[in-house]
Structure formats: structure tokens, C-alpha cells
Image 1 (cartoon, one colour):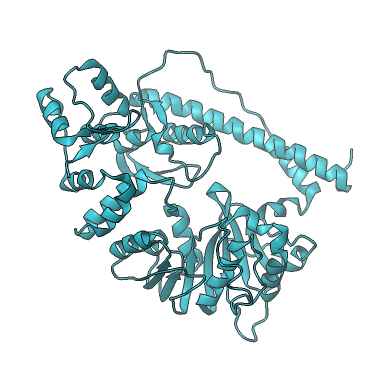
Image 2 (cartoon, helix red, strand yellow; image 1 turned 90 degrees about the vertical axis):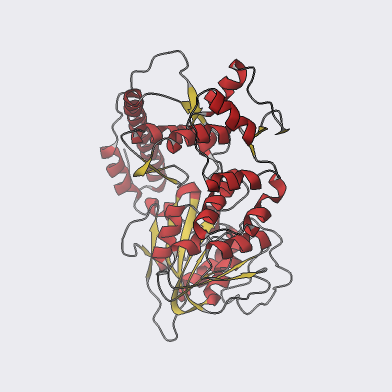
Length: 461
């Protein structure tokens, strides 16, 4: 297969932005013509591009792994299968997988690294036997330790997981309907959610539904109970759940039974509006705990909410509900914190040269982490790319999307290509805007608590 590249690939080879490649196509009549792709995403012959770059004195580097990727990436529909079947060393395969995951970021459900690491920590999944019954391409098991077990419905993803984790035991198949995983010391799982065909009819009365038959529209509660069935008594589960699973009315009976049994230890909100549920399989004759931990962001804290207070008509275990436990005190504390800072001085200017956020990150590899609002961590050199500048770009990119979905690839968003000193000026303006955003959020919280407090008689004029 002839090696082909798109504009983004060419930009990576020469370490420039995509805008520069677009400019070359317009300025130079001898720039290679597309050999495939579409009008919006044309493909070029890599050999022709290399000849043109040499002819025009532009330095570039094509690593063996990059050249292999270009040979694989022609047919997008079969890309995953070709990557999975590529016979190469583990390091090169991981490079190919990362490029594949980047190209299919909207289709693949890859748990962000920081969330995966937190889940492994919360489940004590660094030793013993660790299982993931919906392991995908292995993102969670990559962070775990000990003996690793996984199962994945999609054959291609399962094959990729085996290649990434040759030491693991990865099964192919539907874990809810036909589990192939043995009992483990810990379970971590980022299951498919909003999946209506999860097996509701076939699994009526299943022995795993210790805490109640999951309603048809609550597949996440089926996965939670499935994970508990896979862990030994006293073992922990960290499962990533949609935020709504903590409060939807159809699931309240199961949530109540989990609470009464002491099977829920914590619910922690993470990026993307999702929650990590930390579950523990009750041990025989053990006294159930009296409290659980509800947190809107992770901290090493003790249980902070009494279970008896959660066993009301809604059985809402959303971490956000804890804010309203003492409306009067919360209102006074929020009012004291509220202070609106001055906005930055911003003026109209000519549009600078543009590139993409992904290209900015690629030009400044390093070890300083910058975390996007979706939870993805970018490691950069702070002397080449200002961290506050990058943080602001990532926030602005998410805000500019129509949905704010955590599955969007922010790296493709257009962004100014600026000298470092100018990046620092932008970074300062972003910091000021973020301070305003936080202050306005505090103001909105003061208003909300004021309304609630007046309504409930907790505060008065």
C-alpha cells in the first residue's frame, strides 16, 4: 500500500502548524496534488511530499514507526483491525495505538489517564488480581498492577488490549451475558453507558442482582452489580458512572439497598460530569458503615454524609446534594468568599497566524502537566509553551463546542501561533478571565443558596 499523509501528518513531520501546510498548498504550484481522501481532508503521497520538502529546503523527520503508521492508515474503516494485526515490538505498537486513538477519538471510549489512575488508587488495584469486565483497549488495566484480567465485547478492541498488555488475560465476549472472568481482588471498570440492549430480558432474575433487578434504562446499575459479583468479599470496585445514575428515580431502590448493605463507600465527581462510584463487597457478619463519602472533587477525606440521611424518597447520592445540607451556613460562607475581580484589558487586533492546540503541544514536549477540562493531561515544556496560555486555550476550546462533550478532541481546535512572550501575555489574560469565571460562579452560588435558604426558612432578612 502506498504511504499517504494528510495535512496534519505533514505538519507533524516538519514541526509546523496545519496553517503553514495550507499556505504551502496555495503559494507553491508544485506542491503535490492529492492522491485520495476528500476535499476537506485530502491525502498526499508521502514520497511526493518528501521530495517536495527536500527540493524546498525544509527539514523533516519520518521515524520508522511513523512510516509504518502511514502505511496502515489508508482505509479508515479497517484501521483498527490493521493496527491490531501489525507484528511489531511493544513500543512501536503503543505508538501506533496512540495515533489510532487520536484519529478515532470520537468513537473510542478511552478513559483519561488521570481518571484511570485515580480509579486504580481508589480500588487498591495495584496488587493482587485486578479485573476489568469492559476493558476496551486496555486503558484502565494499563494503570493497574498485579495479575490482570479483562473482557471486551468488540473483537478488535480486545485484540488491541492483548497486544498492549501481553501479560494480561483478555477474553472476547459480552461480559454481562457471558462472563469469562474469575473472581478478583479488585475491579476497575468504565462500562458502556446508555446502552439499551444490555440484556434486560435475558437476565431477569440473574443471581448477580443481589440489590435489585436493574430497570431497562439503568444498564449502569447492572454493571455496578456485575462488578461487585466479580470481587472477593472485602474487595473494592471503582466504576465510572454517568452523573445521572446517582439520582434517577428508576434506580433508587437499588441505590438504597447498596447503601443499607454498606456496598457504597464513596461517590466522587470527576471531569466530564461523571462520577466514580467506589463500591466494596460486604463481608459476612460485618457491621455496615453509617456514612459514605460524597465529593465534588477528589480529596483524601473521611465519610461525610450519613447513610440514614440519604434514604429518603429520592435516594439521591449525587455529591452536589451535600452542598445543601446546611443552607444557612453555606450562604454566609459563600457570601464572604464572593468578590468580583476586574476584567483583563482586551482590545481588537488583527488575526495572528493560526495553528491547532495539538500542534502547539507537539512542538513543546516536556514533563510539566496541564490538564484540560475533559481530564486529558498534556505534558509540555513550560519554557516553550506557556502553561497558562495552554490552559486557557483548552478551556476556550471546550466552551466553543456545541455540547461540551468530554469525547470531543480539543487538540484539533484552531488557536493562535504566538511567540513565547506573547503567549505569556495571553496566559495572564486567561488567568484574569478564569478568576472572573470563578467569582461569577461564586456569585451564582450565593444567589442559589439565598433562594433556598429563604424558601426553607434557614435564613431570613
